[in-house]
Image 1: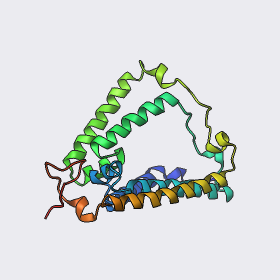
Image 2 (image 1 turned 135 degrees about the vertical axis):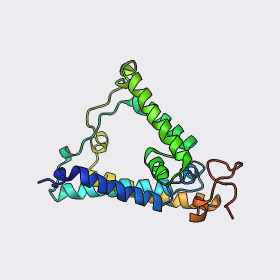
Image 3 (image 1 turned 180 degrees about the horizontal axis):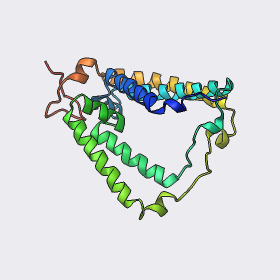
Image 4 (image 1 turned 45 degrees about the vertical axis):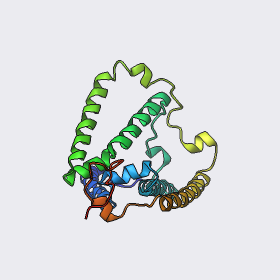
Amino acid sequence: MTIPFYDYGIPGGLLTGLLFGFALEAAGFGSPRKLTGQFTLKDFSVFKVMFTAVLVAAIGLYLLRLAGLMTAQSVFVPTLYFWAILAGGLLIGAGFAVGGYCPGTSLVGLASGRIDALVFVAGMVAGVIVFAQLFGPLTDFYFAAQGPEGQRLTDLLGMPEWLILAVLVVVAAGGFALGSRLEKARGGPFTAEEVCAPEEPDGRAGYASQPAE
């Protein structure tokens, strides 16, 4: 038995996207302050939200398989291409740090009327076009250092899935505690007023040096 969502892919995706965008904006992720605050260790909201999302998805999929509503084979696991993933991670990480957005939050910022988000989205689209043109010459690099097809952590580590999930929960709890301590030490996290305050010319790392009056 599988979850009968296939016939509702487009409306389901639209509804999910609207809810996700609303949640991002409500959490303040439509402002670059949140993401740059993560890189400066002042605001761990991004880490906490994304790690929570990973845990909810992982535990949810595990419970759905236990209930017989889906199988492990119904979840697509991409093949690891080490050098391509490493290069892509470095590039997108640099983009996050410099631009203050990820692809999703840039669209949320654009919907809020932010000019910097518009510039980021334009750069993102340009990057996609450039990559598409260079994909042919980069094919050998892209497919180099290929890992096992469809390998999951349970296969790599030889551990039961419930144990991996338990370890992830412990790591998340430790990360949340450490993040909260670092936030207190650096005067964070950002408040709603600071997230909404306009940037000043001398502001550093994408956020105003002082909250707007």
